[in-house]
Amino acid sequence: MHQAIGEKHWIIPDGFIPPASAPGAYESHESICVLNCASEEARLTITIFFEDRDPLENIAYVVPGRRTKHIRTSSLSANGASIPVGVPYAIEVLSDVPVIVQYSRLDATQAENALMSVVAYPIK
Amino acid sequence: MHQAIGEKHWIIPDGFIPPASAPGAYESHESICVLNCASEEARLTITIFFEDRDPLENIAYVVPGRRTKHIRTSSLSANGASIPVGVPYAIEVLSDVPVIVQYSRLDATQAENALMSVVAYPIK
Amino acid sequence: MHQAIGEKHWIIPDGFIPPASAPGAYESHESICVLNCASEEARLTITIFFEDRDPLENIAYVVPGRRTKHIRTSSLSANGASIPVGVPYAIEVLSDVPVIVQYSRLDATQAENALMSVVAYPIK
Amino acid sequence: MHQAIGEKHWIIPDGFIPPASAPGAYESHESICVLNCASEEARLTITIFFEDRDPLENIAYVVPGRRTKHIRTSSLSANGASIPVGVPYAIEVLSDVPVIVQYSRLDATQAENALMSVVAYPIK
View 1: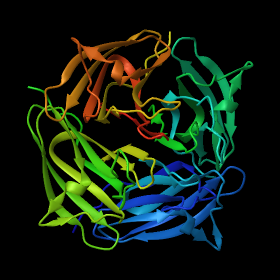
View 2: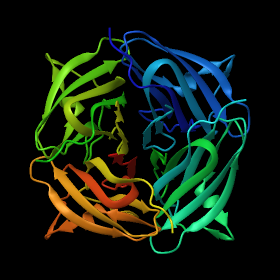
View 3: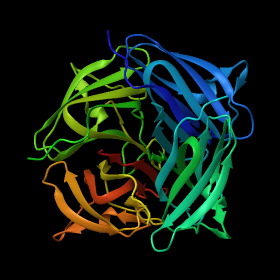
């Protein structure tokens, strides 16, 4: 049995799905990258906060034991609602077992790409 | 009622507003991205430090409860003074309730964009 | 004698080796950058986690005392297996003495480059 | 009197001065960005670690009180020695009073720029 490591609560204040992609090898996207070192699965509950409307709550996602998942934010939805492109938002990730979370964005709005990445902020 | 999470004091040592933008989809800009998970509003007090002159102090900003704000640094001002473009500076964010702060810069000086981002440093 | 500083256990959730490079000055690559401030050498044990298969375990690497090593992830292997290009993965670094770990990626898939970097997440 | 905040010891494992710049608005460079919130000056002592030779030690730098300094690593020297371009290195910053340290790199090797930034790792 492998033990869980990390934290159960993580925050990413700067989310943004670029609205357009130039033709080329890549499509603009963002990923929430989660590592679950434990043998048991991790059940995530994700909340999306906006500037001018109520949060999108209770998005569920499962990361199997001893696996990583790089989750495209554009694939997330709850009750038929998903994250609109081109608007600023923020992300809260809760997990039932400790995990480690990183956020990366690839912006392919222009022909050449731009990359950014942060380790999410852990709430202890 | 949702509880506040994060910290009340955050630092970003590397601020810089690129002086020019190439024609295209984006304009160069920087954002201080703040998430307020609490039900109550967060009142921010921002200080801007420079290399060769006294700080620009007491810039006020409000983030409503359960909202994020991605604040353009070029929009900040205090007593008629704002942050000049093309000079190095640093940012201190104080909040009356705990929040989480990230800083991102998009540099569109060239035709193609460059991105960088950091979670601000929390003072505990 | 110089004392070891940092931590013995570090996590990087977002690993990805870009599958292609455009002609130019750079080749796409990722580096795990390790600083060993101690006089004695640091023996690393690296584990690579995937989305859909068992981890690649027990990759060994030595960082001499008072030296840094910027380790190309494409150079790592264990029992003849290495990290495939173009698939999401995550990295765990264990060290027998405290070190400090940063991860950087240069993506040269397009003619112009994109860069990202994070300090790894320390497990204390 | 303003109080010092932050830490006295910071580490950046991934340093690299790009050897060439394409013609354009920017020159490739790296900066160690330091914020000194205290009224008194901060005296820094910087050490540069390499992959295959002894460290470059005892580089001195002063950050005045209530000021930030964005220090170009190419400008640093000790006993006539400076950091060579195009080789991997790592940075240790010691300060006599608490400060906050961030590291950013602009790579202008290609016509278009790439940016990366991390808050340095604090040793507590």
